[in-house]
Length: 214
Image (cartoon, rainbow, N blue to C red; front, side, top):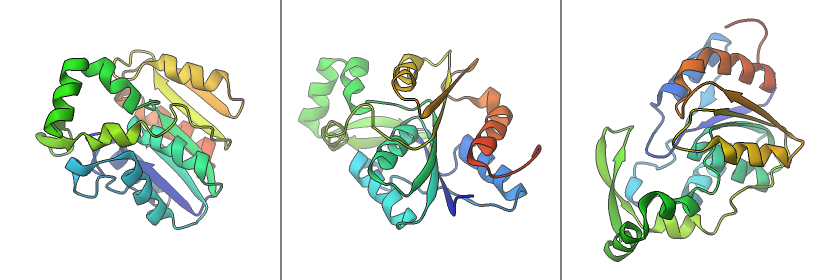
């Protein structure tokens, strides 16, 4: 069993997300702990991919680790695994591959130009349930990273077929080219809220962290 299990939350979320709390509680029932860091470290405005990876680096501190990541957190988990051999396994939930590259598609060129000119843009933060400023450095920094990280560890990838936030086609593309990736397409949306119990049992089996039913 890995020494450390870390859950990486999604964009505009935090340690209090529904999935983070659910998985942490299920792990506690098995006498285990899942670490759930605040990837923004309380400074959402200056958020970057690089800063988030640094949060994971400080938490892991060279230890053997398994990662569970949701949406942007799934992309970060893949990026981190591709750069750190001490990652044992990774679970990617609706991972936002190519995170920065798809912002122009969602916002359009006019809003991207306005964001660049102003230096920041108001973005709704689901964890804090309010709109917060977000600096343009997120996009600039994110474009430095590859869309599909070449992580060679065993990967479990779960994606909802009704996801309208992150298309499951990206996960299909990622898994089809990589024999180390197990792809599970489920009848769900981006939140995967209706398959939490099934996901936990599938994740637990994949990470070998318990027997039977929680």
